[in-house]
Amino acid sequence: MRQISCKQLRIFLPAKAPAQPTNPPAQPANPPAQPAIPPVQSAKAPAPPALVPVQKGLTDVTKILEKAHGYSVFVRLLKSTGVAKQLYGQLNSSNNGFTIFAPIDSGFSNLKPGTINSLADLQKTQLIQFHILNTVVALSNFQTLSNPVPTEAGDVSAGAFPLNITTAGNQVNISTGLVNTTLGGTVYSDDQLVIYQVSKVLLPLDIFNPKPKPKKVAAAAPTPTASNPKTTKEDAPVSPSGAITTVDEAAAVSLSMHGMLESNGVVVVAFFVMK
Image (cartoon, rainbow, N blue to C red):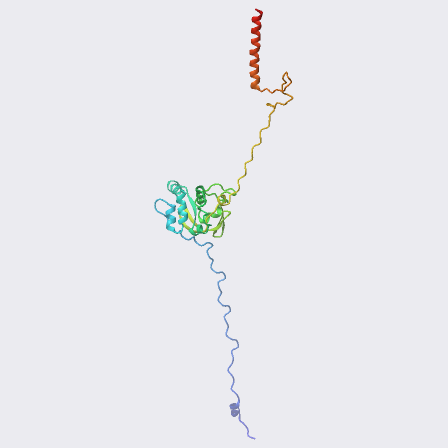
């Protein structure tokens, strides 16, 4: 049997495999941290700029609305009722301020046909005055108003001209008892005048749903008093013939005077007879 030397044995033995790393390469411990809270958004968006820039010189509500376009019916009613002239005088000769809710033309066209034309002149004036507050109210100040809000139309009691304004976030809600709408954009704004757009005509209760007036109650006939008692048959004087006669005060005076004359006549006759 052939012997194999050590050198030959080494040829047949497999070579040693390369050593494996004792530990795998380390992985990153944590991924990069994500921002926990998104950036904070502003609570209220800035108010959009007014549609018409501030006027130079005298302030004219009708000219402002004509520049804004879409308010032709409201402008016509402002002029025909004389309210435009009153506003012009107040704005340019005093420090009085006003807030106007201007309905767009589609607000009038959505009314029933004849709604405006059927009104009396006074009612048309009150309707336009109902859209005007006698103070300047900025968008951020509507929440400070107390309801019902007084308007130029006057009485704010129930069934008359009450106007209620509430806020919900950036939204301003207006209610007349017949119409509910929200405040639109700002048409014009300065220190003395603010005009806001509304999509509906504000209809007051006193004009479009008036309360029935109470009927007048007829006054009761006066009852006889103790100082002027009514003459009865038992109290009436009896004539010599037994007939009951009634005598009033004037007749009594007349009779008394005639009685004196008659008695005086008797005395005179008796005097001459005795002679």
